[in-house]
Image 1 (cartoon, rainbow, N blue to C red):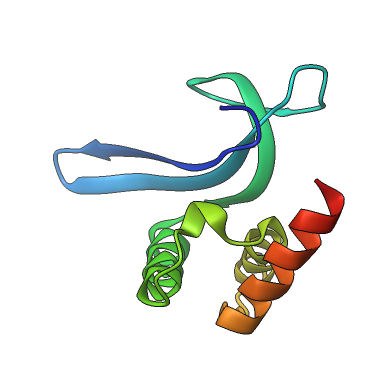
Image 2: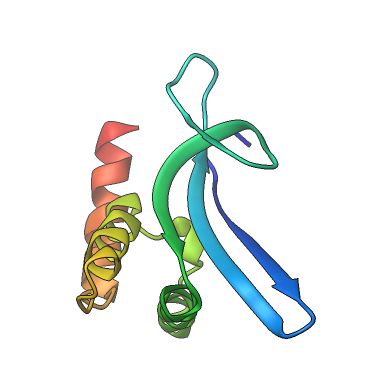
Length: 114
C-alpha cells in the first residue's frame, strides 16, 4: 500500500556461507512521489534505512526486536527513527533506543500532518 513501511533483506552466499548481507527499510511511494530504486522492488520506495554487512544487518534486526518488545509494530515506528538508525550505524555509532514517548510524539505529529 502507498505510504506503508516495509523491510527488504538481501544476501548472497557461496559454499562457505554468507558473503554479502543488505537490509533496506522503505516506505512505499504514493504515485508521483520521488523514490529510490532498489533491486527487486518495483518501482522503488522512499529509503529510510539502507545498510550492508552482517554486523550492521544483525544490529538492525536487534533494534527491530527492541521496538517489537515495546509492543509496537516496527512498520508503525517513526520514519525519522529509521533514518537515525541508518545514520548512526553507517558511522559505527550506537543509535538511541526507540521509546514509547518517541512513538507517542510520532503518532500525535502524524495526526496533525495527515
